[in-house]
Amino acid sequence: MWIEKLVRQKAIQFGLVLGGFVNVGNHLHLKLKPLSQDSLKNFLKSVTGLIARRVTGAKRGRRFGSFWDGLAFSRVLRSSAEELYLKGYFKANRIQRAQGERAREAFLKEFRAWVKTIRKKKAYLIAPVAAGPPGAIC
Image 1 (cartoon, rainbow, N blue to C red):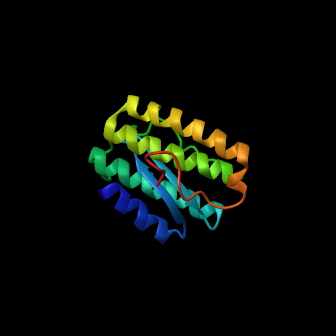
Image 2 (spheres, helix red, strand yellow):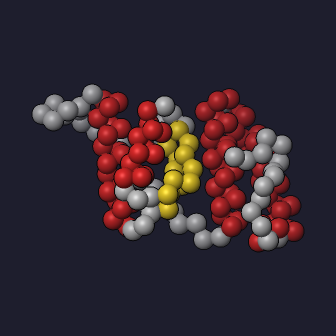
Image 3 (cartoon, rainbow, N blue to C red):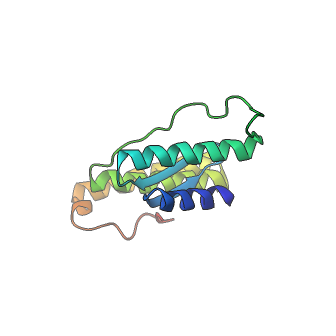
């Protein structure tokens, strides 16, 4: 899809490592590792502007108006447990895109139960999780 291609090209251009991408349809989820705060800022400005122009057909001198509902939301991952939750969240959004909200909620219920067992064992502190619940992540 053109949006993923654009995101990947701009990530390279602005020196970001793209660790994950999910297009849910009405919003995007990205896992990014920027080299600097400025590189992230410039990436977001470029990508959001180009997506809005392509979708609306806006051009210089022919404005469309507002496109995005809000600002980009960002969060810093601080542990391997948070990384694990993010992988599950990405998978849940892929499922929602393909199968709908009910399938997403069913996956999340199963995923959260699986994470509880992993956290009790503290296995996520030892090594990256390669396998997971049925319909494994990634």
